[in-house]
Length: 135
Image 1 (spheres, one colour):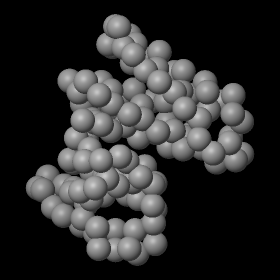
Image 2 (cartoon, helix red, strand yellow):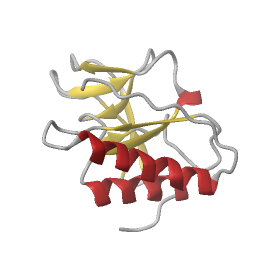
Image 3 (cartoon, one colour):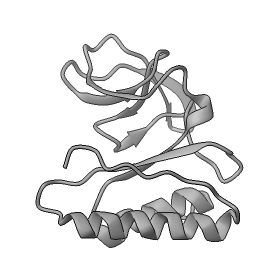
Image 4 (cartoon, one colour):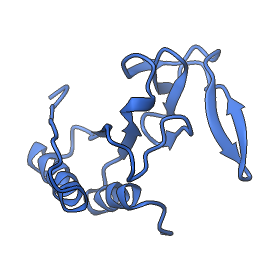
């Protein structure tokens, strides 16, 4: 896998190591709170196609992350948008690790710890908060 950005590379490594989808977002780029919803198909999603800016709409019924402005990530946290893209220079970040019921909770915590340990090495003095949702 090609290197993208130190933070993105870290959460991709966590995803590969624990076989769990991991997404990261620049929370300062959000308009309102992130929400996990079913798309109605009219939402906008900023992306890149062949290296050029493009706008798409998700399929009706597709699971998306969105804010007040539009879609931030499609297909759960698989396809991240341009507007809320993360980089190592961002100061406010949020991450989501999406597990299926088959994944033991202790493995999910281990994946989260790998992520926070790596972030602390990159960003000494990091403050973070962790919340488990839906167990």
